[in-house]
Image 1 (tube, protein in one colour):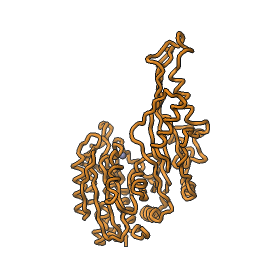
Image 2 (cartoon, helix red, strand yellow):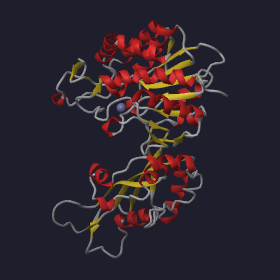
Image 3 (cartoon, helix red, strand yellow):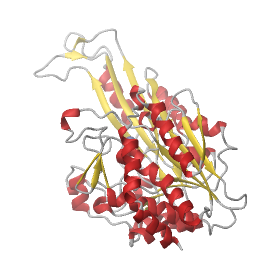
Image 4 (cartoon, protein in one colour):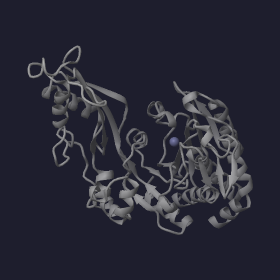
Length: 452
Ligand SMILES: [Zn+2]
C-alpha cells in the first residue's frame, strides 16, 4: 500500500527539509560557474546514500549528473530530468533573507533555487528513498538526468542525449519544474512550442542623409524594412513565409478536448496580460496560445526617435523577430525559407539567426502512461489536474521526444508564487512534501504500465 510510504514521508518531514536546506545553502550559479561541481557532488552523495548508482558525465560546459536504479529488466523505466544550477541572486537588497542561507518563514522555505529547481529535483530522490525504506524495492526502474546548465539555456543537453541514447533507454521522461497554476491548482503539461529567433537588417547608405536635399531620390532603410516585415504576415495573422505551415500537425480531438476543459476568465486573463479585454483572443485562446505557431516582432530600430524632429533618411533599419513553433515545424527549414523569401522581397535584407533554436514538442494525452500520471497527481492533490496539451513557452523537451522518441511530461511541484529567478524565491513546504508523494505515486502507478 502506498499509504505506508506516505506515512513514512510524514515521519521524515524534518529530515527531508534538512536535505533541501543543505542543497540550497550550496550556491550553483551556472552563468558565473560558481559552486557547480560542489553542488553536483552533494547531489551525487545524496543519490548514493539512497542506493542510486551515479556518475558525473562531462560536457563541454557543466557536467551532467546521471543516476540509475534498475530493479528488473522487465519493469518500466522512468527517467527523471531536473537541473541543479540556479539563477544569480541579484539584486541582494530586495531579499528579505540571505539567498544562500535557507530560512523557513510562514510555512515556506526561502532561498535561491529552492523551487527552481533544487526542491523539485530532490523530491524524486526522496520519493525513491521513501519507497525503498518502506518497501525495500522499487516497482519500476528509475534513471536520473540532472543538468547544470538549464538556467543558461541548456546548451549541451541535446548533444548529451544524442551521445547517450543507450544509457537513456526508458519508457518516459518525467520533469518537475516551474509553478502550479494560480491558486496552486495542480498541472500536467504535455508539450512546448519551439522557438526560432532572427534579426533582419537593411542598410541603404553609409550614413543618414538630409530628407529634404536628398528625399525622393535615394532609398529609405526604414521603409524598406517595413515592406519586408509586411511581407511576412497578412492582416489575419497568417504567416506568409513559404512552407511555414507545411509540417504543422493539426491538433487531434484529444488535445482539443483538453483545451475545452481548461478554465478561462477573460477579464482576469486580460488583467494578467496588461491588455484591454477587447484585445484578447477569446474564442480560441488556448489553441492560439499553445497549439498554433506565431510570428512575433520583438523590436524595431531605425533612424531618429528622440525628442523633436530630425529630418533624415535613415541609412539602416533592423528588427528582431521570434517564431513560436508547433510540431512538426522544423526551425532550420523555416530559417532557410524565411531567408529566401525576404531576399526575394528585398535582396538587401540581411538575415541572422539569434541564439539557439528549439524544436517544438508534444506528447499524446492518449498514452496510458500519461493517464497514470494524471491519476497520480489527482490522488495526491484530491483534485483533477489541469492538463495542458502544450504550453506556449519554449523549453528543450524536444530532446526527449524528438531525439529519444519518448513521451515527456512536465508536472510542476512549486507554488504559483515561487518567485523563481526573482528575489525571495520560496517553496511552500506543503507542496514540497506533496511533490515527494506525487513522485512516489507516479512510481507506483507506472508499474502498471504495459507494452513498454
Ligand atoms: Zn529557472
